[in-house]
Length: 364
Image (cartoon, rainbow, N blue to C red; front, top):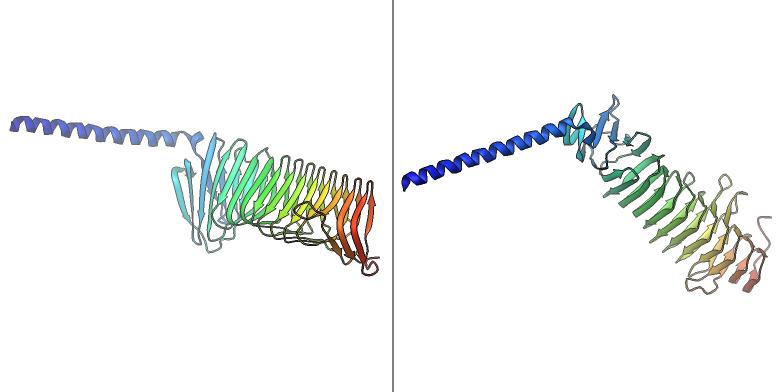
């Protein structure tokens, strides 16, 4: 009995040793194959003499990249592997200087597409990339200094906090999350869709697309000396205030080849008569919708009807301290008007409940 137990234990021990050897061999073989297949490496990381990081996402079927940046370190990981200084690992962690404002350049595929991230001390971002799409998801504030994606990529960006987006060229663009600050021009062939809490587009910010533009903000939209140009439709909606401004030096322009709809649930405040090139234009119908009277100092050019409306579609009121100008191929419909002056030229009917002129045109 004891002899049988002895031989049984010996067999079990030999079996365990064989399993261990097999596991180690398999791990070693997988590691060797991983090291010998450079085309399967997900990311190539280079650091120049100035400490600037350049990340090359290599052209494989699909790549996933995770970047975590703190005040003194950066961690880069990829399921496809990270190559740095000739070594390939699942992730690398490098020390950085106290200056966390240096841009990080990320090239995609053939290096003709470049994404520039200006990291702060709490950058935490995921990138997923394949031949025709790029998705970016950030947990904290993300500054994209530019996203020069010159090949036809569909780009999706989600940021739970604040996103600053610079010059961007893409096939199409979808942005969602917290607060969006657009500081450079966006150029796309397809649609631009923005769904955020707050949206701010400054003087150097612009959207130009062969598709349509949709901007939905839970709270406020601020368009200052900016341009929205779409071959299709333009819809800008704010759950709070929609603010539009031009200046003597820079115009505001919103131009749609199709319909144009502007909605500020709490208030629409448009003051865009300071620059001669400022215009709000549509090839089709144009609607301004708000629960409160619309302040609408602008030049409106509508290829269809023009209407000031409440959210339920009933006629809304228009106010102006200056001289709004409405030129429409179709009907012009609004409730009461109160202001210094009003010019309307309509190809159809003009439907207005009342007009109160408070003084002479101060812009004449």
